[in-house]
Amino acid sequence: PPLYGPLTKVGESRITMLAKLVFPRIKMGAKVDDWQRRFPTHTMDVASVCLCLAEGRSKNAATVRGTWHYSADTPLTDLQVVIIIADILQVDLNPGGKAALEADKGDWTRPQEVGLDTTSLTALCKDLGLEAPVGTPVDLGLAKVLTALIPAAAMKKNPSQIQTVASDRSTGDDPESDSDVVEIDTGSGKVRTSRKAANIMNEANNLMNDGKVEEALKKMREMVLEDPSLEVMDQDADRKCIEFVASMIRSKQVDAAEKVLTAYYAKKEAKVGPDSQGLLALIEAHVFLYKTKEDWPSMAEWAGKHLAFMRKFKGEGTLEVAVSLGNYALAIAPSGKLEEAEKCFNEALEIQQDKLGKESEHVAQTLHNLALLFRNSMQFSKAEEPYERSRQIWRKKESWGLLAVSCKDSAIMYDMAGNQDKAIAMLDKATHAIERLPDEIHGQVADQLGIAELRNRFLAGGCAAGIGEGDKKGK
Image 1 (tube, rainbow, N blue to C red):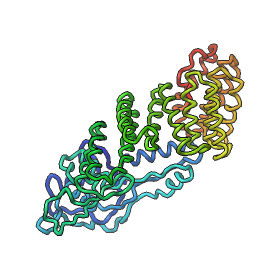
Image 2: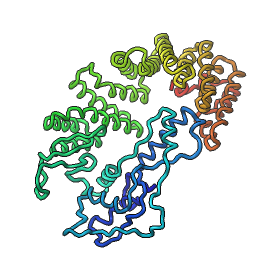
Image 3: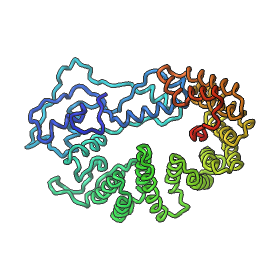
Image 4: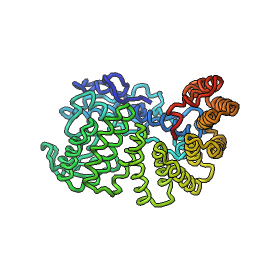
């Protein structure tokens, strides 16, 4: 499909270059193809698909093989794209009542609709329990791209938010009024409100995207004062804040992400109270943040709070509680609370085995983390059983990458125990697991796991003293 996305020049994309037909001036009488329909696709959606496939591969490597097709689901001709762009740029394509551009059928022997079949990808996501990627609507995607490229696109009626205008005015000749009724897309549904409230919301979103959290929150309060029914949009503000924080973490701006999240959480807590369920997503964001920073005391504080919320709002014995128990155990283990961590892992295991079965990959991951707890606390004999159980599951699921990790971790354990023969044997098993992966990533995975380096250390007399922090952490 033709792709578009964040650019530095309008002409870089086959889709956005169509803007040159109407901006900075209309090319009167230009012929524009109105025969062949293709599926303009945002590059961020393609990235999401790649991430989805990677996640699926980590769950079941045998299933995610071959070629997978993806494109957006809206077929458009070039002329239809130009009409969308003109609307974004507020360009009149019928000046004086005459059409500025000419619809051209061109070579009508061409296929009229050119696209990719995404059925297999959708079915794969469903089978693996993943959320199937949803394409960005072309009008919204182009609005964001063009707003960044063309100042004129940053207009009062921001297409990324205001979808349709349902004005009570009898004619279209009057200037836009703050009291006009418009429909805005909150990301989770459409809401009708006044134009003034919609514009304030746009300002708040732009401030949030720029990292100006305090100013964005002030605008959100101003919006609610303008239209109290928009109070429900707080959840959308939470989502935007969390997405912004996550993007900062991915770009290694962890300290800045912490400041943004701390400020936003304080404002939210003051508004809804410290025990409100509305804080749950933000608490999860704190757990992720401090896990990334490897700030275990802070992670333990927030993971403990998250666990208490999950028990209260989701109920005992739920899978959500099991995940929270695992995170809390990972957080408290480095501080020496080994018995409590072991208890949490075992409680999580009971829930997962009851809800998902004893051969679930979630069970395997919890077993692996429990084994790491025992290994890092020098309880080698207790670590062997959960390590072996996790490997049996990953072997059956053909999750070769995870199997290799487990074998490598066991090799380190046997080296720490002074059993070099078993350590080398486990490295051999890790190597065999890696060889079951696609040929093109053998070397990359082996390098990431440090197989060759570990083997050399073992043969040179052991590596227990040289274990890196990365080998001590759970998943």
